[in-house]
Image (cartoon, rainbow, N blue to C red):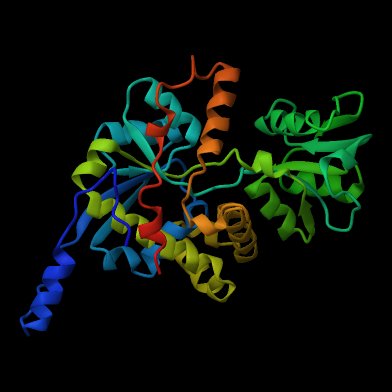
Length: 343
């Protein structure tokens, strides 16, 4: 097992227990460490590996007892962590960089959504294989000024296409209304989030994604801790991540779908009422949680430094950061990845 270099304190509970067993002594049940995990929305499927790990008892095997608290957005997640109301949170990378600019020593430790939550989608039966093929076409978006518009505009600009000359955006809403627009032929492609893709799939639409890999680099939410908490409690961070990776492997196995959906329904009963939609949403979420081929060998949770650089550059260009951070590498850590992913 690789020794964590940044958070180096070790625990000896396992060795002590093994020694006691070897001597035939009784080993008392390990005390459970209670931690609160703050998430920015109440969905269970959005945080599927965590709820699968709860349901399968993986956290309990690590000596952890989780209380999951849904708050309103990433800023609230970081506020809860800063106030000591949550030991682990699931913010987005942008808010993490903003918080570090303000002086909060928060560290992103697990990249839950290594692919962008947005995607450029086309019908599976269409001839479109890349963004350049959409020249002269109409592209559906949820709203005229949504985040998906700037996402798609940047992709198409990279292939020398200009809005109003080479393509048009058409606001068609999300989910069901987007499906209607596709079916009527109002749009030739659609820029949607994970939930939109799930709704379209649930309506029976087979889709292909033609988002360039460079744009998948704008990863989404993951898990973060305050540095002083991680340094004081490395066994908690190690156990949490190891259980999380096991949960990710569980939800990635199609044979576990029914059980996984049961675990999601336990986390959010209303989400489980429409089983077909829950299945489609889970499939879409797991696809976004699965690293691209370029990074899959690095293990679940890995954070490519160049992807953090892309986020920082984007935030500076948009004015969301005043300037590049003095030490961008302090915003994230891959120190635990090998340990968490060890079979």
